[in-house]
Length: 287
Image (cartoon, rainbow, N blue to C red; front, side, top):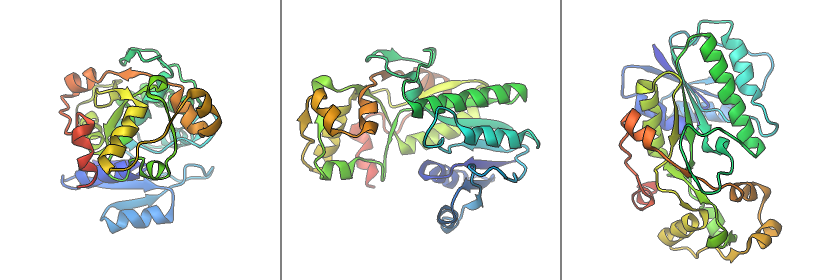
């Protein structure tokens, strides 16, 4: 038995390094030569596989603990990468268990309400629709194969190298706090431990909201990061001005507001967060 991480970027690499302390053999699957080199430099066994190619050969994943962290394609409402992978997996022995890294964006706009895992997903933007499509594909295939699957619906990730530093340095504006949506975060180092816990202890078919349980307005988050880095806070503009000045990507985030509950994560997986609040998490981004 080994560990396979498909989409071995920042989070996957940290997870691979954590597993290397065990007796399990770890393989990271990545799409580019550059990523292969990056993994090998850190002593991680690497395999190059581009899930956008139509003719692929898949090594056996029989008995593997499979983490699927690869992002969906950049456009559309379906995840063709997952569909292509599952078609290949149908031709070989299945892995032992799958953990899929999804997004809390599948819930759509909840108008600031508290959201737990029983809430029906209603994604409003294409990037979240692609993630829900991938969830559903994994659910159908794992049910057919009688294979345990755990889905992690992850909030906004921050951590080393994952702070909006450039945006703050450029002085890009943010909406006034009164107009700002409620958002949620998780530290990348906590996410690594949660992913491992989901593989080890997550029950079959489980879905977990992955967040620190301290939702706050998006504008307040940017202000707190700016204050910590001793940078100017973003200029505040009205929502009407934001529609003219901000990127479509940022506007899509501003259109969704929700407070994620992490009760199931804490109670069922027994996770103890190292960084339950931004106050502890920000210093750890620079250690």
